[in-house]
Amino acid sequence: MIAALLRLQLGGRWVLFLVADAVLLVSGWFDALVSSRDSASAGYVFVAIAPALLLGIPALSDLVALERDAGSLDLLLSVPGATRHLQLRAFLVGAVMLLQSWVAIATIWLGTDVAFALLPALAHSAAVVALVVCASLFWAARLETAGAVGIATLVTAVGLGPWFLEAPTIPRTAAGGNSWLPGAETGLGLLANVVVLAAASTVLLLAARRRLARAELLLR
Image (tube, rainbow, N blue to C red; front, side, top):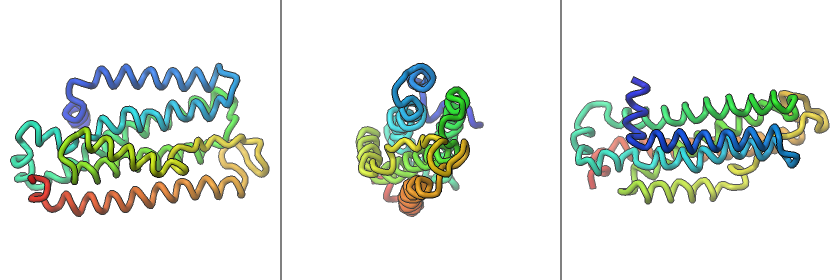
């Protein structure tokens, strides 16, 4: 069932997504493990933020448009639980992105001799994926074309840039920190970023679910 839902959502684009994803992951690992600059932060951007923006948004932008373009939206919405099906597809794509992100971050963490606190990076990546999924659902329920949904979702993410785009790879040598958590002062700042993204995601998801519950609005 999971594979079928992913194939339905990605369609014939899955090879393109796979290749692009591999390029981002390899670039992230190279930056983190080989490059001499701020390696952990650059690696985090490539394996957590970039896939969400460059792959997650295109993958999710046609949640409703896919059915509308095929002329099957009215048929889908006539089936009980149809809106839950749309949400499930979105959450499934998000779960795959998050699992990949966590594995890649953990690999970088181990490859850099646990150079940064791990838990803030995992929490922030989860908040990043959640925002992309919830914003995509929100706009897919309101805009007709996949392109419009993708642009609106990207603008939403960039609008939250101070919290969305900041790499939370704090060196474990920071005052009071360790390989799992940063010091209290730094940790509060990172926690605030996650809270802001989580709050925005919650608002977007609730609004999206309210809109999806009114099937007649999606058929306009």
